[in-house]
Length: 266
Image (cartoon, rainbow, N blue to C red):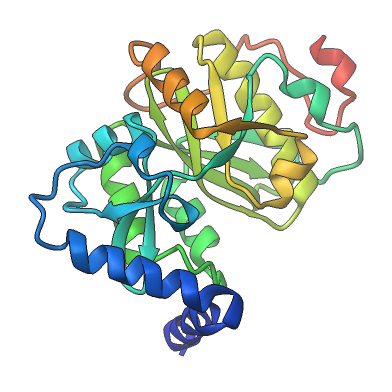
């Protein structure tokens, strides 16, 4: 029943008058591209297509997807088909700037971790979601990227150990792209990303790419970056990053409790 509701919601999204013309244009582009060899398109060549649509995804294999992400392409579902997109603008953060964007307001969060409960975060982000861009097959591809050491989860728990917020992202070079998120406590998620930023500073990451529109992007006061600038960031930081399982450093200089004032991190 939940799957049926999700399909109907997605169909209703694209049949709405404000989206129907775009959907028809995208379907036309897909029909023209179907006979191509399946090679990865250039994001900078997709500027004239609606919403940054770049073409179909020829594969969901980890090596194909990592190459796509490294070029600035985002994997999305479009009416059941895996497709590649390059948004005209992205919401981004520099890891060393993020503490300025997190307000010191109350939160139930008590503990943050990395790569401890990937499947739980993925399930929580999918449960109840009516995101037209999501699809179970894409979630499975994220699991494959986790097994390959490129996808990672951030978990935020309350004092009882219950998962109250989290996200999943892909790390390519020195850029971390958030792909899924959920928050029963939105402030807790913002605090968790603050902790993640401290860790990414240590690992010399250059950029965090935040989904937009989203409440998280608004809370963190993300900057806008256009397609060309984002591609340049990926190219300039392709040799950085950190492969394999992630863990928060025990000696990381950050607030000892997520509800503490951010002055403890200065």
